[in-house]
Image (cartoon, rainbow, N blue to C red; front, side, top):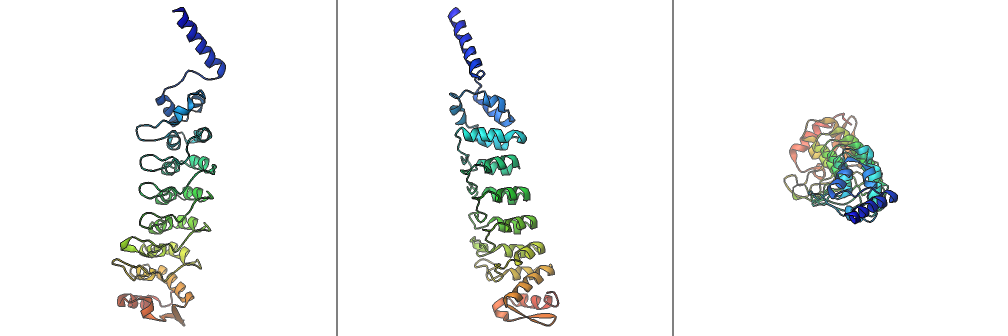
Length: 303
């Protein structure tokens, strides 16, 4: 009994002198991360730390994942720094192939995004099981601040698409998210003429979807770019042969028709005659007679 007491006393003395308190359980460690309790995390001895960093909870979250979904966002940066600098894989994925950056976006954790972005080994272009990047999720959430924060990562590719070829710009156009479209267009590497390859909309560009959604502001932003392709056609499906103008004239939003027509005039596809515009070559522009009639009717003094 005396020997056990001496050993116990010596162990307490060791932890006291080494600066580490009595070891915590696996569950306590994971909870400490979720709560943003950096003091408890720092008290783990260097010898025990590697085993803690390899833990996963029942949902497949690694410690870094938990740091990015914590509700204690203001305390997350030191924890992320501590975990990464002690060897965790910043790009580790859980069961659905989501990384810490995916989770930070989904939980609106801007502090975590900023902290992760400071490490050059971060890969912001990882696709999860749905073939979505963190940027695609930020666009789907219609969060301009998150999109802007991600675009500041130098290694981010804004053109990575889903399995059907939809890029972040396609999604932003479909959602009529003008602010996000503007943010994406600020990226020097953005491809504004990216084409989908899903069978129903093969060849569709962001401008097709902006016109389809009757989004005059998005159409205005896209057609203002010199490199915009207003002649792009859908290659297959029920809309085969449709250009953005086809979609524009099929809805009542005349302003966006005029924006596209103006761009067509600029490129020489339509010849302007006084206060009206006439098709330079109707058969080149569209083979659909109904669209030709609508176009001629709506072109009057709208450019």
